[in-house]
Figure 1 (cartoon, rainbow, N blue to C red):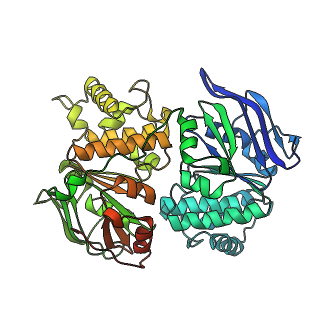
Figure 2 (cartoon, helix red, strand yellow):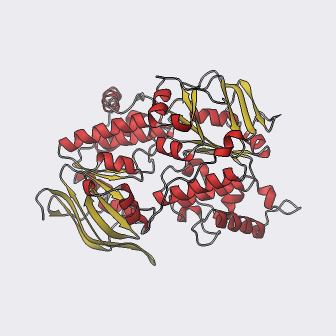
Figure 3 (cartoon, rainbow, N blue to C red):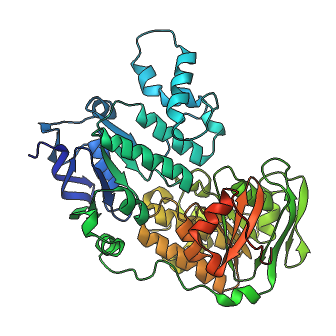
Length: 506
């Protein structure tokens, strides 16, 4: 046992019925290191972390904390041993304030009947100052997904932990917010705190981690120093094969295609103002911007999901300006939320029912009853087209991996034969293999004439996937970028309000 090892997992196995989630997995975390854990969805990463955190019990194997054998039976025991866990799935109380959520664990341990709310507000303000500008008195239910993620991170930082597990912590963060998190990670590392960092973003892993362990199909594949690895090697070990290019070839002809969607003067006089742009037939148009810039609200305004005061939306030259989302769907314009589990899919409903949910009339009988046979056939047809990895279409969506859940959400939109698809964070929380497939799906749809609008916090995704990118700053279009100008530096400058770009074709 290395005296500098904070955590050691030896030959841990875990099965769920006939499914072997982990098989004889070894993992060691050194004191004061940032250790990346990589693998496709279903590789066993979350199962291993849930065992370390006491959420699950292993079927066999041992865990040692600083050399001492540990029998961790609950998250409370894990916290007592110095383990903090920021989960990918946000677990906050929406009807409580930011400050109350951050100090919930400490509050539960208090023996005093009285609560000093002024004290916890000030403590919350102090810990939040290094992460983001979020008022401690705000209700968590009123926050955006990205702001909730920051609260989750702040909550973990208040724990007196020596081992910190971060599961996709930047999935909902902008580049600037992620940069603040990385600076905090560096300070924690200097204090000797060990960090397990789970991410599908290779650039983050190689910029911030010391070593990387790869899991595949519930087994340990390799552990290496980051200096000895490349992103290509990591991906090959994750999937057991080479993926080739992460992004499909762009459609250069889209720049000459006719206008499909035209947005003019869209405003709600608060979150977005005087927004105008065009989407061409067969084009993948990206939308960049810092969190709070209004990029999501613009998409909601286009689709009738958010009230707007002024502006028009034209589809193929015809004014549609939907008052409700039902109007938008009827006209062939659909939207996929960034919050997949909250409003993208119904986790506890079958795949077939999810796919048909947007317009059940399409698979109903003339008497108004849903035809289960037609519903299943539709789900099977679209699932096969999207390469959905599933059992039966009667299985609940909760049984699928994150990437396949996203494919179900896309299948739901395709069930209405849309002309325009707006996607908010289309690959958030999915592994690299699923990202490649989703990118291919979006490009294939564009090649068939569908207009795609992709909002993303991942600048490499916008650059690699999109034909053009519009950049939003403080609710307004700061510029439209394409060709050789489409670089991270240009996008960041525009998103920060530091520069202008030529507005090509609006």
